[in-house]
Amino acid sequence: MSKIRYQDKPWLKHYAPQVPAHIEYKKICIPHMLENAAKCYPYNVALIFQGYFLNYLDLKDMVDRFATCLADFGVRKGDRVAVLLPNCIHTVVTYYAIMRLGAVAVMNNPLYTDRELEYQFNDSGSKVLVCLDWLAERMTALRPRTGIKQIVSASLADYLPADKEGSIPAAPLPKAEDVYDFKWCLDKYPPQPPEVEVNWTDMAVLQYTGGTTGLPKAAILTHSNLSSMVQMYVAWIFDAEPGKETMLAATPVFHILGMQVAMNLPIYMGWRNVLIPKPTPDALLEAIRLYRPNFAPLVPTHYIGMLQHPDLAKTDLTCFKGLFSGGASLPVEVLHRFEEISGAMICEGFGMSETSPQTHLNPYKGGPRKPGSIGVGWIDTEIRIVDIETGQDAPVGQPGEMWFRGPQVTSGYYNKPEETALAITEDGWLKSGDIAYMDEDGYFYVVDRKKDMIISSGYNIYPREIEEVFYQHPKVNKVAAIGIPDAKRGENVGVYISLKAGETATPEEFMEFCKPLLAKYKWPTVIEIWDELPESNVGKLLKRQLRDMVLERMAAAKA
Image 1: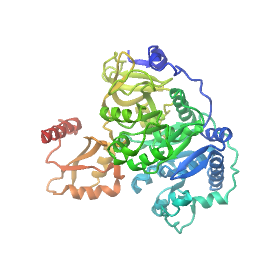
Image 2: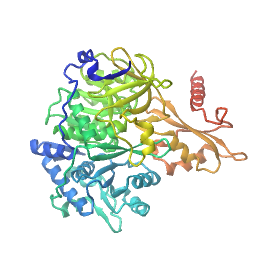
Image 3: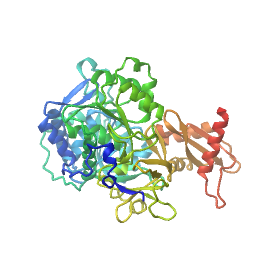
Image 4: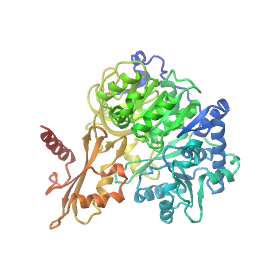
């Protein structure tokens, strides 16, 4: 049967013999990671941002000052604090200050529209917002429609080396009550936050992901979920040295993969961490030349962009010991080319926001390479392949829905009991919504998605949300959003619309309608108006048939 734990497959130990079958987890909550690093490696460089260096002792001082500030704002244990920032020093300080108070971080994508942010601020019950300075005016205007009380504005210009001062413009602070400058907060408050007991089972993060109703839902991630996963990474990357490595933090920290691998892991290990706010190919290659990182979690778009960039010729990639790829399948030719140039193995894996973030990974420096495989199950992670029709465990080699259970798996969705009941069984199995099979060696392959999710440049896009936006347009009769294959981004969003009787419209009209309502990465690259969309006898849109029709037409156009 396709129900396994890592330790149930002894031959996997041949592929990764240094990796333990089980971990006795140290109950190190997230704020204690930074405290330990500041104690063990006080003068080690913790963060590098645009050439500005910050050591662990100074980072802890900043975290304590900002935690004192948040406490003065009224933030208490269990309160939610919203974060709207790219990868920068302020993000790390804010996140760990929230954790220091036993509060809950609500990470948000700075590309989101007001509609998307208003929902997440209200759904989470966030009391305070820390945002990028160029968004502060917008957020001040949005605040009356939310429960946000104080806004802290953080500028990327705050932390720059002397030779780069003035290279990044800062936005003026909005003239409104309870809007504060980030650096002013650090200068005003001493590093003396209140003592708060943070427990292993306390909620640490509300991580938003798509919902079956078209609205995002927040996966509850505890200190136990997050810390257990970080300790799994440490065990898996068996030759990584505490205090001696450098991480390239290109994947956004507001995304669960970036939060864990590009922030929590390097702080747990006392490493240097190079923060990249906008991971363009030239920015990535420049950072590699300057700082010689040893590890990096990236998405396929990053690898493809670097391989196609002219600066690749002058960039030595042999500094890497290990690379990780997630978010979407990495084309095999891209994987082989990047490995050939760097000499490092790229480990592809699989995960979800609900799993903090991973359930599978290919063995690091060992084991067979199986093209298309998401790898083997993580340490202490149980995986089932469940036959959709019978509900029983499927035989080896037969597809079914993947279910997970392990220390990194969420207990449910915040204030969404119905969504929780649909996704998680009473005995703790999380249903992934992905169709996969396991081979005789315990390697897993995703073959389809039970859900209609689109993955573009590493971002999860939920068609239901896109469709709900278009249904607001008065001319729309029916609409279907599907993923269209794209060589660089993995998938693009395609929107197919039938109009109400007697109406006329253009794709351009619909594009202008959706832009202010959707984050840019969710914008469709194709909008088409059809006389009729494929439907079942009962009027249900047949998206699989629609996608087959679109792909067939694309193939014919290439022929």
